[in-house]
Structures are given as structure tokens and as C-alpha cells.
Image (cartoon, rainbow, N blue to C red; front, side, top):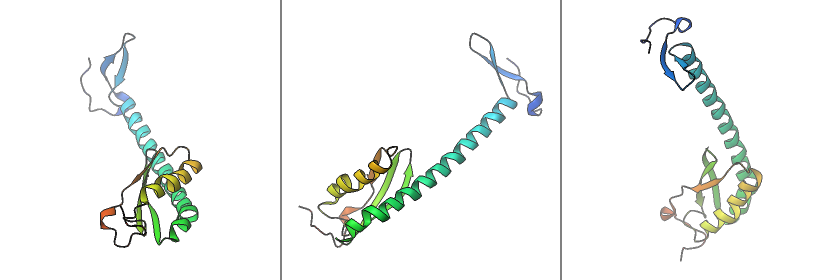
Length: 138
């Protein structure tokens, strides 16, 4: 095993030997390259996540919110990450006895139908603090 080097990456020394073939891991060049790949992947994921958040909020605004608005409700996208959309219900939806059905049969169906890569919808609403639910919970 070589010792750690403080020299620039193009003069890097092997710091470990792995596998039966004796593949070397180099301190400088390979780790610098790997760090760059990771940064690029994070930027791409951030852009894709931002794009998906915009698309999901547009879907909610154009398809879902007009339906729940008739009951004084509103559904907002809080975040999207790793195939999961996080939403919050407000107005008549917050604390409503039918909020769970609205989420499953309205919000989820609309989102899953439009965006198959979304696998979960999580309701982060504090339903206990709803001040004007459309239907009182049983």
C-alpha cells in the first residue's frame, strides 16, 4: 500500500489495492473525478426535482384544486423527492372527515395517472388544527 500523497492529482500514488485483479484506487485523479461526478449528479437531480415540483404544482392547480375549491379547500405541493410528493391540505380540506378519501381518490389518482414515476403521496397536513373543515370528522 502506498502512502498518502499531498502532490497534485496527476502525480497521485496508489493508496489501496482492491480485488483479485489488483485494481488500484488512486488518491488524486480518481477521487477528484468521482467528486465531480457526484456534484454533477446532484445538480441534475436538483434540476429534475425542481422541474417535477413545477409540473406537480401545475397539475394540482389546474386539475385538483378546482375540484376541492368547491368545498373551500386547497392542496399545495410542499416538496418532491425520490418519487414521493409531499402535500398539505388547507381551507375546507384541513380537518375534513373526507380528507383521506380526497387524497386517495382525487390527489393520488391525478398524480399517479400523470406522473408514473411518482410512487407515493404523503399528506403533511395538521388536520387537528383545521378551523373550518367541510365535513366534520366522525
